[in-house]
Image 1: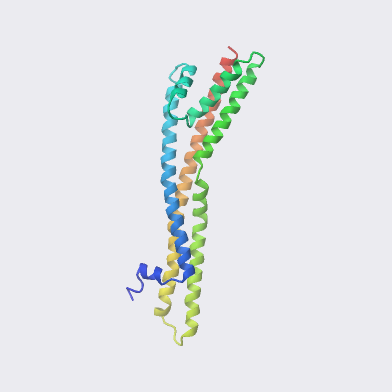
Image 2: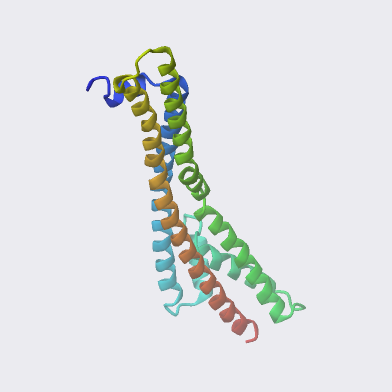
Length: 224
């Protein structure tokens, strides 16, 4: 009985549909863990980049010099640096036109920064929807495999004269594995989604605060 109820034996002797459910859940779990590690790396790098750029920005250096430094960097500006780069580039371009009002110059720079911030947020939120989907659907997919496996076990009892626990135990056990795999895929995905959504929201707040503060600085420079 112990060998018949081993995990590997239960998986191998499960019905084809239950095995398909297990394969789907295992694939979803592998992909979600890959995305979990990827988002952890991306969000950590975004937080570090924001902190480093804020130190450079508020160090009192000339903004035009900071803009030129970003232009000279080998890597493309990302995060808060990308927002600053887009805003200052548009501000400098519009300020060269003598027939444009100062507020129009500032509004143009602000729109450019909002576009850059939207692009950065899209990159930070990549794959979060997949984690939410895995977290919400995996338990139900596992439950479907469990219901199907239990249904087959009880259906097999119709062909025997005397029902015993040893006849239904393997079928029920293999069916419950599908539920366990569904929870195994769902729980990390839900935890990661909640954590990363909070991190993205906090970064979005930092980006918005920087955008407003930089807009105020541009207003002073536009009227100078």
